[in-house]
Length: 199
Image (cartoon, rainbow, N blue to C red; front, side):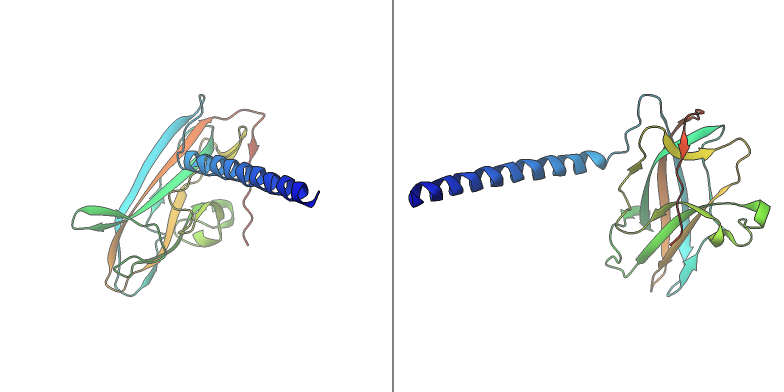
């Protein structure tokens, strides 16, 4: 009858909504777990802090030439990355999460560049045209990238230096600190290197 069909349709709708809630809960749980850059059993952790460095009042600063970014050494594969950006105020570090904070400090993006001295792109000149590694917009700050097993960025012995380029502006000036963490391990012949294309 029509009443039975309506009851069956209603029950099916309840089951579908329940299933959707379960799927959403699992997705949120996965998202929460993804906030941690957890090294795999064969990986090590590399941490570096750059700064504090000054942003002059009202200026957009490009810190390409000033900020040398340490990286793991040896023949290794960088498998993961997470970055934190802080405003340093009165000895306290305030995490930046959004485009603009209460003092008008605007963080646009930061990029890891790898020097390409064979074509003249170095810390002293042209670094912004060099290869990119980790591009961090305000939406990505604090959110780790962990590549699938067997993929990453290779660092070979004698690898060119990295430069951390931060683009930000602050009407009253600011001091910024950038912390970043990498996971890495010894490179294997079967590894595949990640390539980032510039848009």
